[in-house]
Image (cartoon, rainbow, N blue to C red):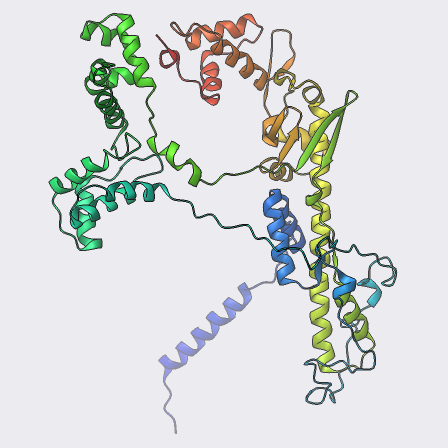
Length: 528
C-alpha cells in the first residue's frame, strides 16, 4: 500500500491550478494593421531606375548571362544560330533519347496549379511571323584582322624610381628611397612621418634604419623631378621649388624675398595679411607683389602634371537630349535606356514542345525550369520598359517647368522647383523622382547637366514674386567677379548689392550661398 503524502498532493494541485490560469489568460485576438510590402518586381524596378546608363548596360549583360531566356535582338542572329530540333525525337532531360531516364515510365498527375497555357508565354505575334533583326557582316575572309595594341603606360612611381636609380646609392638607400616613393600620395606629398617609416622598414622589409638615414634619402628623393616632390606639407613643397629655381637661375633672378616669405611668414601669406608682411620686412608694395607673383606661379600639387596620363578619365553619358528647334523645346531619350530585349525563341519553342509531351516527372521539372526563366525574363523586360516611361515623363515635367531656361540658356530664368513639384505633376512618389534626378544627365545646347541642377528652392522678392535661389547665386557670383580685387566686398556689402536688386536676404544667407558657390571670404579674395 502506497503511503499518502499531503505535501506532494498539494504541489500537484497547485501546479494544476497555475496551468489552468495560464491557459485562461491565453486568448486569440484579431488585429488589423497596414503594412507596405514591395513585390520583387517593384524592388527590381527601383534598382534599375537609379542606375545611370553605363551601369544599366552592365546590369542587362549580367541578367542575360544568368537567364538564357532573355536575349537582345541587336546582338544575336536568331535565324542563323537557332538550334534545330527533330520533331520525331523524344524529349528527354539529358539528351540520351530517353534510354537511361529513370523517370520516363513514372506517370505524374499534374494538379491545376501546375497547368499552364502556352499562349501566356508566347508573344502577341505568331512565332512564324516574329521579326528578327540580323547582324550586318561587312567583312570578308580576305580582310586583315587588326587588334588594338594594349599600351603599357609608365606610372608616376616608375618615373621617380628610374630617376632614383641614376643616383650613386647603396642597396640599403635604394630600398629606403623606393619605399618613400611608394608612400607618396596622388599629389606627390609624403604624409607618413619619418619615425613611422623607420618602423615600417623594420617590420615589413626587415630593414633596420635610423631616422637620420631615412631623412638623408628623403632629401635625395626631394631632388627628383618634378620639383616639390616628396614634401611633407605645402610650405616645404613651395620652399623646395623656390630653392630649385634659385639654383637654376643664380644670376638672372633673385628669389630670396619669396623664400623668406614662405619660410618665415607662411601663416601671414596664407591669410593674405600682406600689410603685416610688408611692414615686418620693410619692403614696398611693388617688391612684395613681385615676390608674391613668383610664389603663385609654383605648383602646389607637383604630381598632377606628371601623373595626369595615368589617371582614369570619367566620361559622362547623357540619358536625355534636349534640342531647341523653331522656338520649341524637343526631348528625346537615349535609345540605350530601352534595349530591344525579348524572350528567347528557343525557350518559347521548348515550352511549346513540353506542353504536348508525355506527362512525366522529368517533364514537370523541365517545364518548371523553363517557366521560371521565361517569367524572370518577362519581369525584367517589363521593368526596363517601365524605367523608360518613368525617365521620360519625369524629364518631360522638368522641361515643361523650366521651358524658359531651355529656350534661352539663362540661369536666371530657372524657376523654383523641388522634387514635390515634379512628383505632383507626373503622379509619382517623391522617392522615385529623387532616384531619377540623382544619377541622370541631360545634354542641352548649353552644356550637359545633372538633373539636380534644375532643382532649387525659391524666395520672394520685393515685388512678391517667387524667384529661384539659383538666380540669386548667379547675381552674387557676377558681383564677386566684377569687384575690385584689391578691396573685395564683404558679406555685408554683398547683402546690400542684392538688396538693391530687389532680393532682401540676410547676411548669413549671403554667406551660405557664397559657400555653396565655393567663393572664399573677402579677405581671401584680395589680390595686390
